[in-house]
Length: 122
Image (cartoon, rainbow, N blue to C red):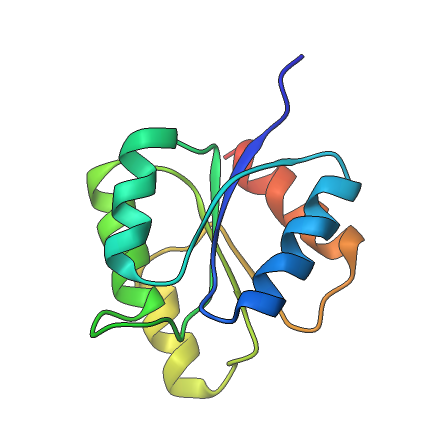
């Protein structure tokens, strides 16, 4: 059975590497890492991941929330926000994109796995 392919959208290289390592350890395949909305959309076309893990603050003029909205309307791939931002206005904006999950950093592997599995079964 093929592994679930996950795209990580995170502009901090060290954090992205740690997330990738943790995902690999719990049985997922990281098919790419992006730091901006433009990179994200380019990788989506090439790799077509099963799930996107999206930070809210990413490089460029388009943030993770706007990028998630583009993904949901164009390619309909599940998006899980994986972020340290949980203030009221950020949560409200994120909810408007109807994310498939929201996991706060720092996170436990179990919480991330549950969010991924639930997103895959929507």
